[in-house]
Image (cartoon, rainbow, N blue to C red; front, side, top):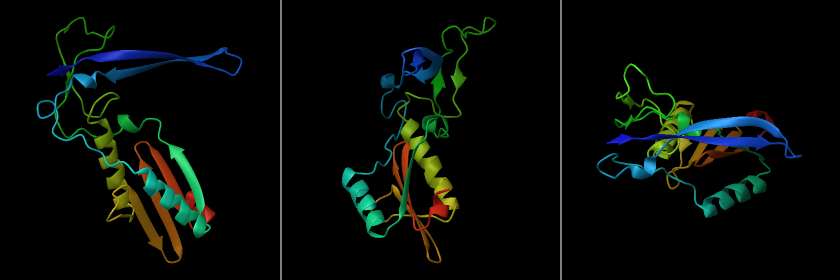
Length: 170
């Protein structure tokens, strides 16, 4: 099945409701994908609210520095493990080959496989940086180096860090 693409337009406003910039994002119409036909596995581990509370309570108990970040382009970075084909986007159709389709190499917003591709890529990176994955919680990553401790909790495209020293959060 070929997935169609759609342009999403948004106008960013400042605090006085003046136009800051116009934004455009190309998204896949992933809601048309069917399990076992268009994709095999889409599950991406997500931290439970209780796990985040325990993470923050532990960090507070140990007087750790806590930092948070939101990954803006998370779903655009994951490698695709399955073959996904998309149509040419509106207004960008090749006039010489109007019926051609594209095979995706990286995930796009809107694809059901996007969160899984992102988690797999981030997890592989953290493991390559000497982190160990939590045995009970696959969204928790831990790295010890002597007395230094760095904890990483993943919640989709949000990441919470807890570090025993401030320099580890830099």
